[in-house]
Image (cartoon, rainbow over all chains, first blue to last red):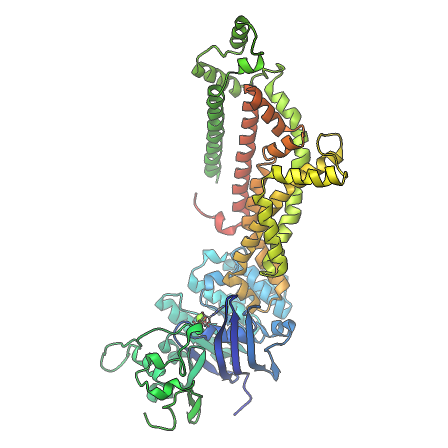
Length: 324
Length: 307
Ligand SMILES: Nc1ncnc2c1ncn2[C@@H]1O[C@H](COP(=O)(O)OP(=O)(O)O)[C@@H](O)[C@H]1O
Ligand SMILES: [Mg+2]
């Protein structure tokens, strides 16, 4: 196994909400290799965003972190603010779900790109302007020079997401975390943005973490999938394995909720119930109350993740040892 | 833009016109100036003569049309007390009022804005809670109560400052502090909530994710965005520079426009009251227009909106 680019180990996050302390992550293990494309799927509220915001120290003072986030041999958990700032953007960039409100409404696009270029590459003036235009061109924005003078509210959501990607590229990072980058966009724009991310990855070799609640989106754009549920990674496997031999009942649930592109049409089956709130988790396995394969032993303890096959991990008492 | 401005000005004139009209009728229906200004036992014929000389014997609507007619030529009538033009009496008092309201205005900004920013950046800290408690106290306490407390402390007990009058800079301090404290409280609260609102926006997190140090995120992204609503409130405060000191001027016997208003109302000195209300309406309306224009200038989202 080569040295991972980033290695998240037993990451926990507790939010102090004033009234109580709520555990949002219960020991997340997730490593990303250089250049790898990893998908992170799970229903809304399962902890996908919190995982990566925590890794970059972006959760603010109400969050307590535990565990480790190893990046280039350093542990980012509990490290100095300056150290985190040097990693953010420069080594690991992140883009978000709502592109139009991720840009500052009072500045022109060119100025916001210029800020990233000044910060990471020390560029200013006409050089920065030229580079900003090149980046916009790179992410497929026509008439880039003119667009530099636009404000975010003058551009569509898809265009703003392209701007966010251009800004992320400004520092030439080793990895991009895209948190539901297309959820707020309509289907054709979604496809274009995902295509753009693929293209950039091919050109630059940067690693990609694609966060989505849609297993289909992740399947088409990544090599490996981590399935998250209630603050834990419950399954981690290559794309092909996930589809061929899902080991966790939650993954199977997500798969059966997916429309089939080929083969006979069948009814989509949504998983019954909802993700439990972090302060109201069931005993034992968090998925037990919604699980089709529930048995009494599920309530004994949260199951540990076991290696079902080479590179295929699952956290279910039925995985691995016994056949399903 | 020109059309928008023209419409805005028209609305402003209408507002001022309505204020003047309303004041005119309320004042004339609420008491007889002749009886207040002449002594009660004055002979009936001299009261009648007084009424006639001020046109009070005419039907109200005739008086009204005459007043509007004169007002349009810039003549706001004379004071019934000393016969001088009302506008002159009012204008004479403006410097005294500005002498306390302008420093108070600067004090509000100098204290309220930084306190609000600090509280928002250190949300739930001791400093934040203290700021908010002081702020609630500051704007729930009526200004005459605060004025009296300050007088008791600094004039009566400590004897550091005079309690009332206008005989030099020392006399202005308590009125300025009284006015400034209440405004600072409002501004601190408003600035804090504007900042918190902005700090919760996705672009703040995105700016941090970009690697921008927190200081720069605050200075370059949070403050300019929070400045938009805060500037609006400050703009409205400009509108109260003339009218906002009525109570404080009365408590401290400060010879400004506000005190003139109180005295003129008590005496039913109609022309003076009307002149002051006209002036107050005009300053507030102008401040509102200025705020609107400023808004369009500082917030790019407001700029190209077709009006
Ligand atoms: N700042 C916060 N304070 C308290 N709870 C939070 C906070 N941010 C996220 N959470 C909780 O953490 C859980 C995971 O959230 P998140 O990572 O945003 O889910 P998603 O998988 O949809 O991205 C949710 O239950 C959410 O309510
Ligand atoms: Mg999320």
